[in-house]
Image (cartoon, rainbow, N blue to C red; front, side, top):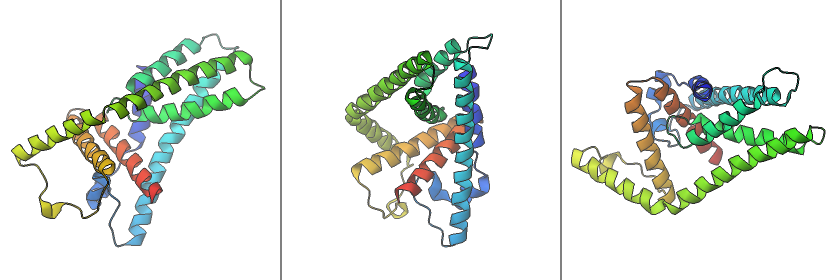
Length: 230
């Protein structure tokens, strides 16, 4: 329950207004923005960046407070079991489509744990515990990376099946509507999976607005990543 509330709190910060979404349909497709008015581009970039920065700030403050509670010996309540459960929850939710903030929290947590381990003035017990948590997170993420790499063929088959269903239902884009941008096989795969994920979240958002928050969180992440890669 705690983990879900924290993730929802972070994700609801990154909510994009309908006006911005309508003005930039390409944003939904994770394609770089094409607007002739340079001022509009700058304003939008700043807006999206501020939203995402706020989410990162909230996540960082929560983790910092939680970790400080765990290291404090003056507290009547032992927060360490709660923190351990929290970390395990993040590892479970990190691959769930409705919880994109889990990856952000794990990234922030890893950075903080490294600082704890490197701080020689820190209590030895805290440093050892931090090392254990860091090893747990790193091992799980490494396992997921290896697993996903081995499943590329499975993913390609899934994409082919989805496209076949779209053709049957007449949902495929016409040749005239397709972008002229030449993409590599990997880029095309990622872009298509992002599109499918957004559609999946949009359908579920009809019943639960928290899925909309997750959808906007992904869009902000991808938009910032796209601008960073330029």
